[in-house]
Image (tube, rainbow, N blue to C red; front, side, top):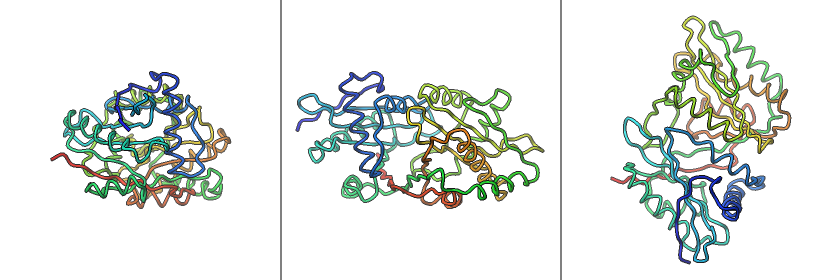
Length: 334
């Protein structure tokens, strides 16, 4: 099979037949990763592609066969600019009927070329653990990096007693209070939440991934992207009352085109304020609200590095369990 790779800006820009094929390829890949996964509609596929914002760069590509049909998807992303150049993070998906015909290899080579041209220092390829893609990366001599757990929880798993106990413990912590917002951070709290985003630099990250510099402009861009993607954003923070600083944050994203699932985003607490149950307090508060206001949400999904034991302890108590593990493979360019 001859394979042609072409760039596309977004799902919204695709011809109807190409959008149908791209959505089917995406759904097939996820069904392989998570057996029984509900297929995503074309509208939902387009929605999720809108949740990209500066300074993140995401380049997307289609692979076509010799008859012009779409047989593969690829993307590579990074934050730009950064204080130091990092690597690109790539994903490749191939239509089931075209697997084994060189589509994945052609797309991977193209993503490497693109990343080199954009002066990245390397590329990280994400592959499901123990999959053929995982084995191909090993055979190609790539360096194994982080293993990430794709964790999901049934929203009915955690008992009210557990959630109430976490909330009570947080409320009993001296000198802290919760602040909440939907969609956008209030102007008077903007700089506090921007500063708190740097907490996430303490989380495990890929070997060639530099620390991120967060700005008010980025947070506002993320909020706009969330609105464009038709997802509700529930934000929580913990304020250290004596200083007024935001010392913890937790985000929950609820896509309107997939009402059965919610996505747990960043959760973190600044180092000097850990050990008071503040992370559990935030998660329990959003969990209780979800039950009251969004009973249709059946599943919550999040990604955690397998090495992030403190967050995994909280998540496991809420019922999160790994439905798939994704291994990152690093390809340095130097």
